[in-house]
Image (cartoon, rainbow, N blue to C red; front, side):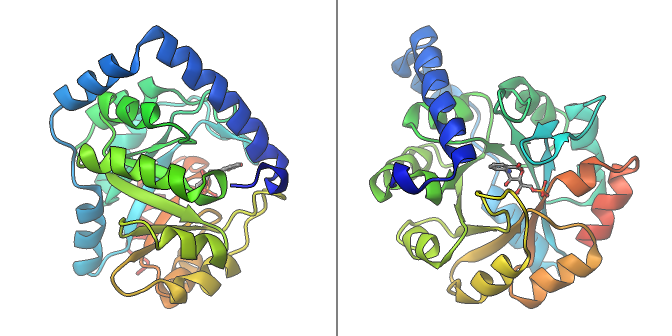
Amino acid sequence: MNADTLPDTLLRILADKEVEVRERAAATPLSEMEHRARDEEPPRDFTGALCSAVAEGRIGLIAEIKKASPSGGLIRDPFEPAALARAYEEAGAACLSVLTDGPHFQGSPADLVVARGACKLPVLRKDFMIDPYQVFEARAMGADCILLIMAALSDAQARELEEAARSLDMSVLAEVHDQRELDRALGLNTRLIGINNRNLRTLKTELTTAEALAPLVPADRIPVAESGLRNAEDVHRMAAAGARCILVGEHLLRQEDVTAAARAMVEAG
Ligand SMILES: O=C(O)c1ccccc1NCC(=O)[C@H](O)[C@H](O)COP(=O)(O)O
C-alpha cells in the first residue's frame, strides 16, 4: 500500500481505524480476543451460501445493513438491524453485510450481533480491516466473513489477515477497484472477489467497473459486484458480465418495503 496515493476519505478512515484498534486492544488484549474468537460456535458458511444460491439459479445477494455512509449521509432512520436481517432473510438473500464502523457509517459491533442473532444467514463484518486483532474481534462478535480492501492493504498485510481468518474457518471477501488490485487479490487463497463500483476518490459509483473486471476473474473464483446497484436492470448488467453475486446496501435501505426490494433483486437473475 502506498499511503501517498490513497484517496483522502480512505486515508481519514484508516487513520481513525488505527486509533480505534489501539484503544480496543488496550481494553481487551489480543490473547483474550483470540480466546473469545476460538470459543465461538463454528462460523456459518458464507462462501457456500453464495454458491448454493447461484447453483439454484438465483442471484447470490449479500444484503447490507448500514445506517449511514460518507457518500449517502443518513440512509435509514429509524434503523433496526434485527428487523432488517429478518426482512432480508425472508426475501431470499444468501448473506448479510453489517457495517461495524462507528465514525463514518454510524455502525457498531452490536448491530452485527443483533442482526446475526435475528436470522440464520452468514454475516460479513463490513469494516476496514488493518490488523489481525480485528479478525479475532470479528469472529468473537459472531461474524462469518471479513472484508479485505486491497487498496488499503499491502500484500503482506492482506496475507496476514487472510491467514487469521483461515485459522478461524471464516470466509474472506477480497475487494478490488481496478486490474492491479484484482491481480493482487488473485494472489490470495480466497475464492470471493468483490469488485467495488465505487470510486474511492469521488465516492461515485460506475457499473462499468464491474463490467470491465468481472470477465477477468478466473473461473475458480467468484466475482461479487458491489455498490451502486439500484434495480433489476443493474443486476442483469452485472450477471451479463459474469457476476451473479451482488452486494447491495443503500437502494434496499431507502425502501419502505425492504423485503419486496430485496426479493426483486434475488429474482432478477
Ligand atoms: O459508501 C460509501 O460512501 C463508502 C465510502 C468509503 C469507503 C467505502 C464506502 N462504502 C462501502 C461499500 O462498499 C458499500 O457499503 C457497499 O458496497 C454497498 O454499496 P451500496 O449498495 O451503493 O450502498
